[in-house]
Length: 539
Image (tube, rainbow, N blue to C red; front, side, top):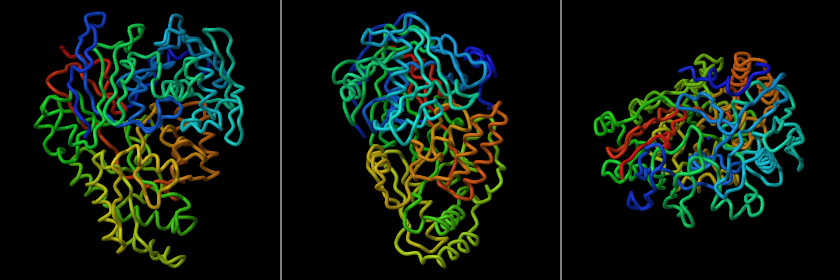
């Protein structure tokens, strides 16, 4: 929409529909916040971040949950996924390719330094630089000057003055402003460039919260956040702080919730799916969210490359009884997938050509597997790696049993104790079988479920999938003059994905969670994350 500002987009880009010990809840009591807000410290569940807390090098939910609390971007997303200006005063364009971004005056990082246009430009350049190897570098690919083959400055970024910078894209992209609330686009203070390693352990942001001080991040235990007294925008903390506890199992977190040692939980264990709504009553949460679950097999893994690999992926997909698993294991908290995105995203369709590969069809599965055996006889065992701290064992066992019983091969789960350990081996390309993957949307658009995962060289392309036709369609979709035309092209991308199956779709997730009697004003957002800053708690 030529010449439109992000403040106007805020009204239109709405959704149609990225055991540890249990310290005392009051271990880091915060001072009373302004405006009559509560002063109790809210405790919530989480997981140990995979990496130091650098926004452009964090692409998993454990770290992302924290970054979204301690940083403020140009825009933010409300509970429904609508876009609102935060640091941005305006985001304007006449051609969807050249953008002028003005930021509001008065913003400061928690070390007292000002947030300027240079804070954004320098952070984006750091995240995009090839030699830095940041996981979210792909998000800067549309900006002129980006290169995934050599170190190159983002020449499309220009600082005009402290409150203004411009962005030139390689091609027109109408939904560019929609992406700018994602953590990859957060600003950074000079301290992040002076000492990146130290900054990652003790990040300085400009969001509604800040780290409580030295030692606030106790690895594999918790991280303590307190309100940022200088934050004065829409997400101002209504409590005395948030302590995110890192749990080894979802059962431990749920038991803490029931016993009053945890205030807010965003992941109910499968052992409680049949009881949590009765146990929590009106404090139970079970609502659709922009979450897609799958598993991935690397493109070059033995028996899974080329034509043989395509046949085996299709056979495995047909061998999974998704409906039975979602009914039996998840008890109404998951829905069998019919595409690679999410039903809560505008433009979603359950009738993309090729989606029949997701249907449970034992005879077709055996036929395809036999065809693959003619190319190269199967040997060995099929494994599926997962993190046991995330409540995945039951569905992995059920999925492996479905594959084993249908195809007559050995198949079993491969547990990792911690999510961070699993992600490290995935990132380092050490996986020897399939591995659990999925996507919690960064911003509410179909393309966010496709480009970052299946584009050649994309930061979350864990299976190293590459298809020039997919890349070309992704580029066309991004450049489409309207969201509707863009979505039509994204559906063509999915037609190819259903043939290649770089990931095997499983189901869509509801966010299942709840909260204790100790807190009020708990609301879960479009992407399954609670709006922690809204939660109130008495001391």
